[in-house]
Length: 604
Ligand code: F6R
Image (tube, rainbow, N blue to C red):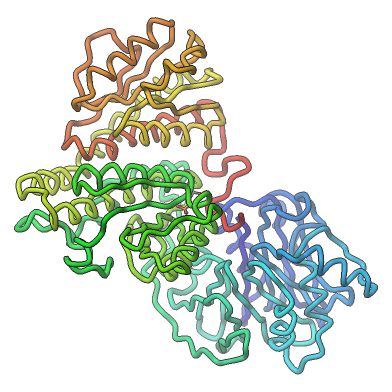
């Protein structure tokens, strides 16, 4: 999604801004732009396309104040004129904005009636005109007054030609973070753009504004009440956002999974009582026992991780559990169960649909915790308590290590819920041991890379693929299909194995390979029958399994180590990441920047 960078200090601003935009590229965008204040005038450079295209258009510039943006089109096509920054008619105010102004049509009509001519089709341009038209003593007051008439979400930065020493930022629903330097200040929509300059940051809250100068900042609310924020230190290093010798971030992050799992487990497993310690939940044993139902809410892969979590909770704690796309939940006037524990699942902590589901739950008095990877993110803060995922920064649009750490965290949650109920100590111990073995098991799957690459190449020509699984294997199949679609653009459909015969089997022929998830559990015979059904129609089969299969049954077999059956989904998902990755690379796709997608989806 869109990215924002701002700078004020003693250095030339342009290189800092461009470097910041390059670090936000991973979020997905279609155009980029920069505005700097030079000799009392705002100089704007914009382009549809990549940040490197923007860089080619820029010249050396001594300006020391500026704002920059990468845009992911919502109002108006991706084009030079719709790219941010946007200016008012007198070229006095420049604005970069993330989010969506919901009453943009109304504001544009009103401003047009007052004689304003719009230079773009965007909602953001209305903000520039509105701010410029305020009769206010300070830029902050002008922004505050303009925002009173604005509905929707925003993270924005405003540059005023008349006030060269300051920038004003505001936040409602789209993140804004200030980075504190020595005699210089940085602004961004994501700490990724800041951590190579400073680790001292201030996250703005919704409804907050800040006036930023090279010497510091002052935060206040939309109602002009000072908020006196103090900086926090982010525990992230610049090289978390570097490729470190890998060809792309997806590959790097898949390789980081053993380490990421170990981090998620550290200090949380208790051998003595065969349980997990999850202090961040803020639930004592009585509260845990009072939970009558668990519901996971997330979008995309986070929803599939939630589905794996629901299976784990039902199996280990015997509490009814399910998962639902947060985007559906928020719109269907959900019945909120006061005895349920709701878990909002999100790598970024910014996904708007998930955030809206959390807000709906809180409004109705539901108990909701977050399972979030980004500390200080909107969902983490809205929930207040939960499970921190400890996956480390995830840059690749296709989620891998964050998804794995979601499922590992849900296994610990299920273990804890089970052990305050009737899960026996020996069963609990079995899960503790199984979790401890996971990093090593994932290592072994990753070592199978060359063989999985060969299999991917063999089937990369297929236009369509089935991913089949049942019960524990069903969310695994869904996640496998999702990974393949998003980075290789091969059409993939996930189906519950037993449902195949009720319709989709008609599609199976020699050109329709099926990836079948075959855990070595008590449904093994059923899954072998699924393979037989597909083979009988001439369909090629790739089996993902930790069982011994009859020889020659599947065309290709990808084996994973055998662990505790309840944890199988975690491990069975890993080869599907590699399969998608190698299919995409055989097809020459831009793996870290899949078309039409963004890393965090902060719009509806
Ligand atoms: C798939 C993927 C997306 C995200 C989804 C939710 O690989 O990355 O489907 O899982 O957009 O994002 P978060 O977890 O940030 O809420």
